[in-house]
Image (tube, rainbow, N blue to C red; front, side):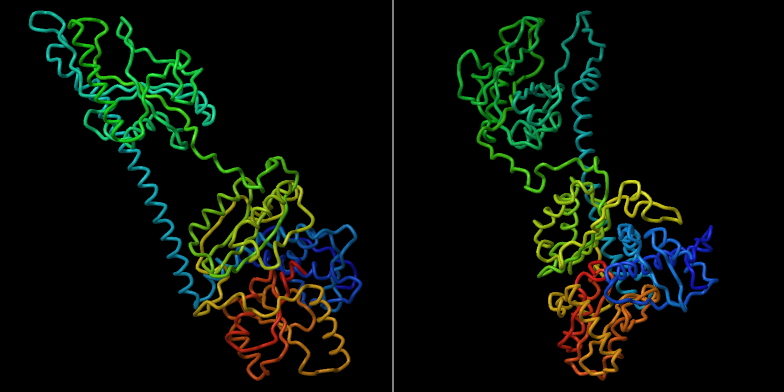
Length: 593
């Protein structure tokens, strides 16, 4: 390569799936370096040590993608890449490319190291356990539906098939007269729901009134719980509400039809009497005793009514009938108001842009039930149409997400209310300050070599660890050294650089460790930083033992990584396992810097 501006073009096709993966990872590292330069322009210049080979299509493709993403000029000088930011350049797509690939780390690491078998097995165990729970729930729902189906089939058989088969002569008696239609032992229920409750539950017209049948001697006519179960079979929306039941005896028209009182002008107060309340003569069903008495009254009414009529009277009842009225409970507690973060919530589908963000947390005491917490986060974040990938383990949470910009503040307020997040989100939420337009977002990521959105869905997954560390035991992640703000970090680097330049090699010059993997470090690093040269994070501990074996315990150590989460674990290991007392880490990692 010469010293002039060089346009790097991506090769037309990836030579292999492995090359494509390497390309994506190199894009991540290049773009990380771009962010460093853009923030340090005018202060001092970082040079990112890279040996460039003209024949290496992966490097060429990565540089080309980085140039497309940032709109920056890439110049080669003596095999050192200098990335010069243009005035109109944006770091927005950096986060898109970074997070669309960085999320692969946890899963890929579990498959790339032979020493990670125990971790892989643990993850597989968690997945299998979750699938077993989901399978049990599905089977339970299936069994319940099958039970309802069999119950309905039995009622249908009692009402029609068995009754018709009982007429051995097709309904004709021996003398040629029409025989009595056999009536099974069932109660007929006519159920109505008051308008207030229908409007509140948004019940359709079909659910205004309905008819149900209960077999004699079953729980439905002996307990309040059983009666409600029978009613829910027709009025499913009532399962979501607290309501009151009252019962009454029917009025019979001359043609045998049952009169159902209207309910449009019904008052919710069952004590109201007078012509204005058609349900004034109904009695409340507050417990099993009242339910049993109601069906006994229905049986008595049926017997007395039919005893007054001859055998072929048109207004004879075929079976005992009872009227059930459902009304809103005036003393029921009001539903809780929507949380403050949902007030004035805009429609996320109407957003004009997406904002990329990431965060992690190591809450005190950890996450008690990771599976339940995952369900909670899915529920809480559903109103925001959030996208991304979130890992949850007993040790904490690690998230990379895309949020519709018009509900970003609502989302942040929501996260602040979750105890496991809130104050435990170290350095808060890392937010890309420049949102991506919907058009930019749709091509900001890559899948199978083609542009695609960084995230298409929200995946909240339970893992053994949110970052695979390979340690035998979990450490105290809240005791992980000093979380150094980016500006202080910047000043420390500058001072160390100047001292080294002046020939000072004192023991108080901090050791700087790049805790990223080798494919990231190979593209760019802070000047003076020592790369760990590891293929995955689990290999870091042996490197630290070797590098620090002869160092005093008060040696100043500075660490950094992409987003800060790895350095939390590194800081905890150096202080708790190796006994170093002067450990600091770049708060929020390169992203925050």
